Length: 609
Image 1 (cartoon, rainbow, N blue to C red):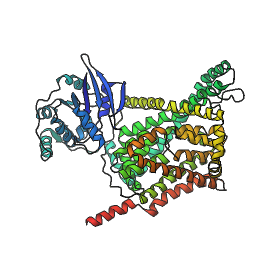
Image 2: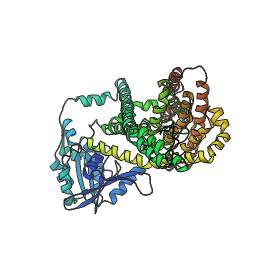
Image 3: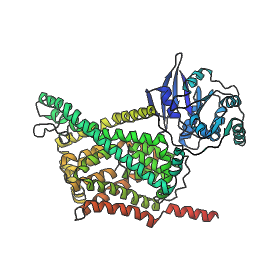
Image 4: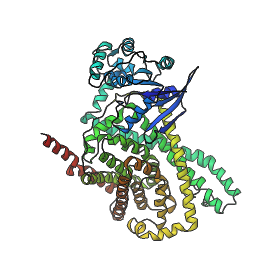
């Protein structure tokens, strides 16, 4: 089976072409010896089958990062390379093309986004470009599928008819000459979408746009997620699943060890999905009834923001503010991804330039950005006591994020460089690609989360049965009860938190906590340590030494925050005023204290002058 590698710059539509070619049966793999991911699938034609690999986006085959190194290695192992090129940025994209032409591998050039190029007044003579390069050039529009049949047909004809011997010194000269022969640009007026693109980057209009986008995204996740949660709760769990569990309970005799493990304790002779604490009751309900509805909507919104081209604009908008915390503007993307799952967020941080940036980003993300599974539980459980208490949780995490960033920025040597990031045009996301991405993410969550959630419930049951929870509650009572104001049984939630932080939040339910205790418990569990999967990825990305430092910061921060919150909420300060005060302080502190990164950059400029 021949291997096809899709290669190209970031944001040129490779993933959409991959989705169109391979259908739904795809898998994500880590490149051997790295944590860099690429996607593989299969393309079947009437006469032949191909393995298709979607290489990470790269600007050059001379790698300067692990991601570019993987892309270069995949090209070397290809039988055919499909070089996906953005027709709206032909000159920049052809740099990689000329490097590919020097490799001993058949190449097809997929000139993608030709519709957008036409809208911008860019005209490209495809036949002339094919003749000058000496390789097949196919005009495509990936989102609509235009040109993909011709691309597939050309796979059997993909041979290099000529090679262009170049060296780095004259590569740009050759590209400039080539562009002059095949491309013409005609004057045209801005469309409303292009005007919106410009407005998204100007502070006066971009900040309100960012606020509106994030507010609508949050409202959609919460609103639609709550509707899905209520539907699943009423019609699936209470309507069907509860009856099946009652039959199983009768079959098991209504009690005993196996009954307690699978069903848990019956509350007033009935199954209670929150308090029964059985593997098949609370375990299944937490994953499918509480977490999954919010998680699915979040992934849908995140996919739209990714593919529409808005996230890089958001990075530009927040760059100056994040610099005050020692962060790069592009750090906002791992932060946003972290609200879905901390694992891809930690992986996304590898695109940051320095070890310092990656350390600060990963640490703040793990401490103050709860994943959607945990976020859904916090909203569902703390929200029952009123919006003011929920506001305290989010305001506390925001305050921790700001203060911890200011502290690390001053303690950790080095500085954060200015941001240079490519901003793609706004595009209408492909529904097919969105559906596939959503399905893959949900499937990944179910595969990876299920063992931890059900296993966590099982472990807690066994610990309760053996009396270990009671012993640990006594042992850690000075911390859990004295500092945090939580019952001794809450020790179990901290133990489970090492496996899954979202499950740990769910373990607070059977403890009968007050609103104050729920707020403290939620904040501590969100901040104190990453789940096992995130911990493993962070060790690979940061190294064991930096991960140990980050872990110490997390534990100290979590218990300090819990202790202070316990004291404040135990006074007469209303929750709403406390939340507002924390938000105001979070905004004022960076303005007052500034950033050592900014001062170091100015110092470097003075030295250079």
